[in-house]
Length: 96
Image (tube, rainbow, N blue to C red; front, side, top):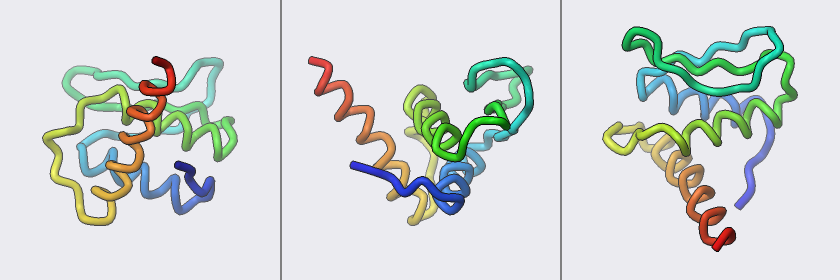
């Protein structure tokens, strides 16, 4: 399963985080992308110097590490969320 690596895909992935009440920030610095919880604030920090493809891949990886199963996404984002989480299942099956 593949994604189109464009600005629209990035915005849709950011929408998933927004509906799950996460804040996505792009910051400069010498760090790896990841997510953190600060005083009950859900913040995802991505290196702003990453390429568009790397930003999308980081958001996909983070979605697959954060529990969002209880979130009711809009129809469009629900479809994307299922597609993203199915990637993790496929990778796990390939690893076995």
